[in-house]
Length: 262
Image (cartoon, rainbow, N blue to C red; front, side, top):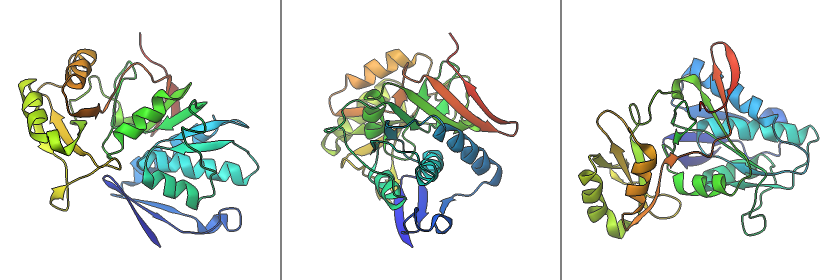
């Protein structure tokens, strides 16, 4: 077994060739919640049907995206051909490579046909909070490089307003952590440095993450995004605003597709 760390999730991937032994490749995710994992699996499988011959595909990160990646690998094993896939984290790159998905990068393909990724919260306008797994910067780069961005999730991620359940991740260069923290607190945030095993968590880019909770949630996400991005030392926020075309949601009633509420 090979151990891959991605934020709060653990992916265990058999290093076998999917085309030779598809039955031997498995994905196990912890923490384990049987109904929720089933809904994620259904959403990921449905999203894989959006991939067409000859596409360049963005691959998200995290547990729900892993189900999509596995379903995409199964479609490739069944005969679908894509130009390549751009992973949004080192963990996703390793998982996709282990499953036989051809990888490329944004230098070779700066414009992608579609990007499919998970989310931590989804509001009625399909604005998102992402970054629970720590890959928010690369996820945002891949999403904005794509002609079409589709989010997949289980129904527990649907919220009436962003920030009421999940903190907002803000990726910051380590040198600027303290002054950025003070500026975020001045905006009304309760700020916690993200830790892993008691030490600061570092992203694939070598940065740290400040998780920001706002009393009452995020009332004006566009304004907040602009305010936080104006702070020197901030690299990216976990707010994904106005770019999601479609959400594929798994739940007890099956899979449904929703668009933004105007």
